[in-house]
Image (cartoon, rainbow, N blue to C red; front, side, top):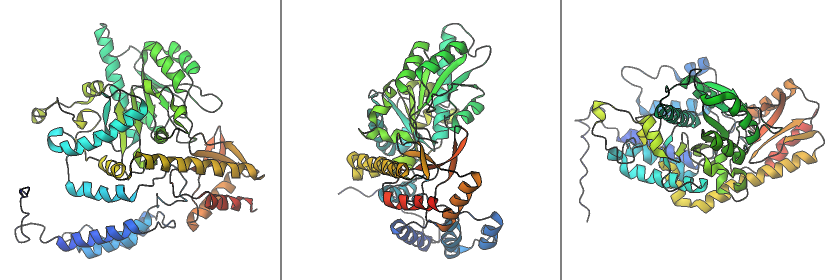
Length: 467
């Protein structure tokens, strides 16, 4: 029998918080009921003043007790949020985590593991690394590749680009040059790159050199080569998209990798949304060339069925990331740098092991089930695209390369789109928001939930026929 080394918790009389057992039971009861409950598509944001009136003061000297706090959460706060996992929430890039992942997110919080250093979180980090190893295998990267989980694509892109700039600066120093070019550093991307790329450029104080996309908005090797030649040696990274957020387009990764290789420039691939499609043979060919990238991100909270917030950040050569991100201080002297320390691989120090819910769900269901779930969304998007083609009052603008499609209602203007979208959002029967494509307002659908039924989506689209 394994000896019990658990240190007993303080008794209620000894603990400053008193007896919290009833609070814990009440929260766990709510969790159990909510995990099994269906989604409410009518939930939506409320004005701040309305929320303040409904909750009243909640942060008080004596507290309001768990009954009242949980009542406010259930009756006021949760209904003032959008149900991201509703099958007919097709706006932005929603999220549809497995019940296993959601439940294990609670277990991860209860375990309260510091996941920054191997010494404090070895078991959790080992499990996360198994997931990262699976992803690296999908990329076609060597077994020495690796990374960490961060909060989202913004932090992932920033961290990868910081590593890229540091690597470029070190290369200049090795050649006897100043670490920074005279006219400053720059990164290269198209206008279809995610907004976080420009945000990262602002944080890093570097310029963005735009590359014109082709007729589908893709970054191509030919166009990139011309821009790199004109930009000189100030470019430290190229950002390619493996599934743009707006239209789900995958860049010309083979051509882009060729151009980066010729110029000796770091290639970062943003697969926050679309990278999940690497699991399917149906779409794997779209990603040819990704095996030559230097860094990559994918958000499992988008299309790999994990809860918020979870971004997998991977490097082909993790030692380059460590050189850029390892923090040094006297209170960190005892950190064993020979071990796998996630804090050395991104712009963070304190971190929870946010990859554990994904690990648990993958371990429970297996990767075949994940492939099946992704392919179900691929199939749904193509069935809906076919339905759009069949309706004379609709025009398919961008067919689904992955699982996003753009279409227009013939003869409609901005006010028509806004009115239709808001009407269905408030009714709770369908969430589809307009976006812009090549300057024109269109409607956009993003399919990442395997529970989304094509016939229900088509029925919602049929309301567009109404005058």
